[in-house]
Image (cartoon, rainbow, N blue to C red; front, side):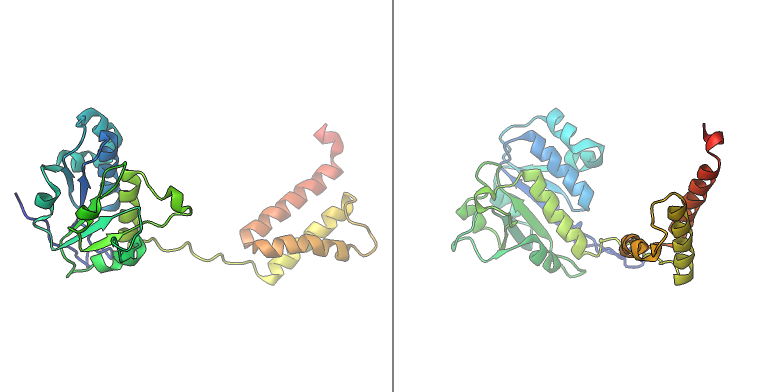
Length: 260
């Protein structure tokens, strides 16, 4: 049996640290669809290999359907083991997952808390262990793990997650910790005050023409409309668009016969 992969990361090629040293171990999965879904999540998030321990049901067609083409290579490269102890032997760090809290299961990390500990050029080869869908890892199985992760949920009575979803959540937090979060969208370049004032002048004259604003003190009523645009932080292009609408409204009012 080959040894797990060491972390590989080339900062010159990518700012995102590698997660290929993080293998996913499914212990006694009950549904082949979840094995396929986990393979897809591994591919989505750039994790390592898939290891499967004593699967309850083996159905390559169902697994492949859930893996989709994205996870097909991960699924086809999966290794199967007769025991969890055997599967974990080569790893320097073993991280177990649980839905149940308890003094004998802690200390418990969240995926976000543990992710930075598993990333970097000196990160250990790591097994991320997930238990069967119905009961999860037993306390004895968690004793084979060095650290324990629990995904927080809104309702403690609904703490159990789908197996593939759990893999995806862990992979997502690891991706963010590795620097894989995309940059936020660039800030909006707001229109200058002159551009806004010109647009407001156009708007005021148009609304006066169609009788929406009263002729006595129209600026007072226009202020309520301005508040809407101020909250929206309009760009020059958006102001130009609104002025174009105003021009078209004025043209339509002056050319009702042509509209008919």
